[in-house]
Length: 87
Image 1 (cartoon, helix red, strand yellow):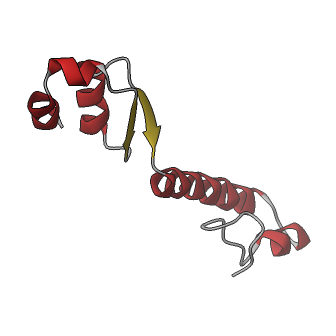
Image 2 (cartoon, one colour; image 1 turned 90 degrees about the horizontal axis):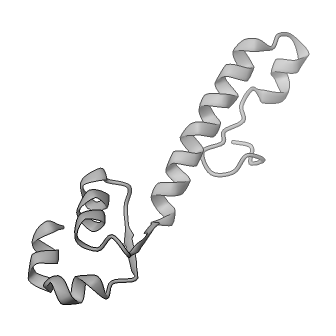
């Protein structure tokens, strides 16, 4: 990304208002260094992946905490795509 901003030049880099990227930290760091005025927007795929991973973690911890009939409600559910979708 730093090479891209070097190619773009300082003048044009200052005009960047929005940078769309994945959540890789070097992309974010380069944008903040070369176009600090730009708002950063993460792509939907990566946001949804992180959200799904977080929901799975909570689902698994709740399953471990519960017992008996309460576990049946959670068993077999996957939050990978939707918190209400059954797999």
